[in-house]
Structures are given as structure tokens and as C-alpha cells.
Image 1: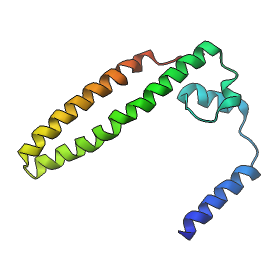
Image 2: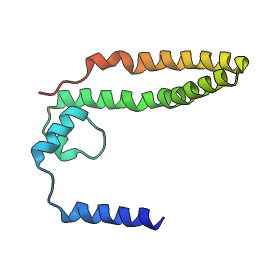
Image 3: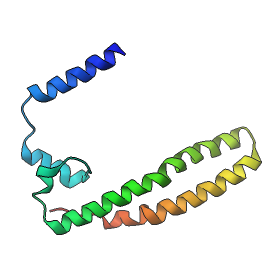
Length: 119
């Protein structure tokens, strides 16, 4: 616990003592990852049309976590059902896994080829 608190304090102090990251580096990082959050100064440099596309993409990614997290858990439990030879549970988990996979495909995966390109 003490090590965690001291690490946190060290990170905060290091953040404010060191010089700010170069703006060009931040902009390149934002162009590649398109994160959501507190990126106001960097986001202002992008055209409104691109920002709308990025916002749509971020919303879709956030909504996809409601499929992705249960999908990961059910995938693990499906493997456990096979190991323990619980075929009744395996059947239901496989059905849930297929439904979640369909949801992930339509909500997230099929949009990957349409990623926002920032020049």
C-alpha cells in the first residue's frame, strides 16, 4: 500500500517537474490513437468534420465494451466448461458467445476498415 502511494506521488511530482511534451509529438499520438478524454488543445487543431468522425468512432468503441467484456468472460467460461466436461453449461455458454460475437461484429469489427484517416 505504501509503495503504491509513493509511486503515485512520484508520478504526479514527475509530471509537474518535467518539461511538457512537444506539441507535435502529442498531435502525432492523437492522430494515431484517437483517444477520448481531455485532449482539448490537440483536438482544436483538427477540422470539425474529422472530429465528428472521431467522436462517432469513440462512441462506438465505448458501446462495444458492453459486448466485449462479457464476451471475454464467456469465452473463458466456455473453455472451463470444456475442461470440466460440463456439456450442459458449454451449450448455453456457446450460444451466449455466438450472440455476443454477432453483436461485436456488427457494432465494432465491421467498422474497423472505415477508420478515420488523419493526414
